[in-house]
Length: 365
Image (cartoon, rainbow, N blue to C red):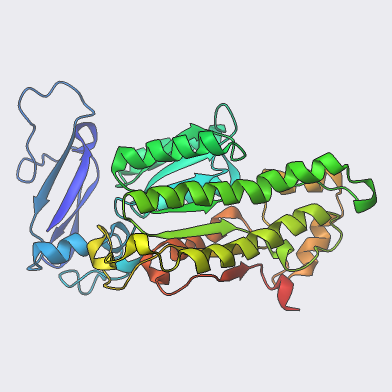
């Protein structure tokens, strides 16, 4: 069985329906009376409804295991067979993305929603960037199963962070993971670095990641939904970037990498999850013992607002960085969507305590 969920206002729009082994496109204005019917006394155009119909002879149990991504990746030659790549699906799972008001965090949050997740973006901005609202509208219009939310919170405030994350978990009765992307940078020579600025950066880039991970882990334990965390490190935690004087930033990212290994060791096998397997966690399709997996993504140079500021301050950096990797260019935030989806989904079910370097070959010379 496959269910389509949409809004009545879009019900007569472009809808792909499966007929036998072929996909038929219903043109705008086509009356869908044979597939769906308007509920009685319907007054509001944003009424959400779903209608299930048979597209193959799979059992309902098999259909329930198909992920949001898998349903969009049908093999056109075998449409009636079992869907592919279901291990990448995040159907109905709940995630927190810190630093999610804009930039890399927002791009990664969008990917999780497209995969079926309910995502809560946390940031210290009173209002998220205009790009957040644009992303939210785009996801809603596209009819993805997941949802995107914004909550204002400073990751340095443990009490507030615990409360916001607990509220998000309570709204769905679960918490499945974290993308810890909040971070700042300060380009200052070591001999001129104010001591108070060292503590400020470490409080955000390291302590904020630590507190976010702990707050999410508490909710994962409470609702017995072990899952995965992706801490955003950097290739700067492995090497010193050519021409960029950021000793404290580099150190903070190295600390995040070590934090990832330490939490993976501590949370990989927990008595709180005894008896919990993949099969007993809604949305999962494996049958293994479960803990909380923690890995670190180490991106290379990315075009983000923070990096754009670096280029404004030091125009020579762009050419230097482009020549510093094996691909001769700087990456876009969208190029990390797949890596994070892999790290949070069942596709990486045996991966923990690791760091994944995606840097265009910068550290491979």
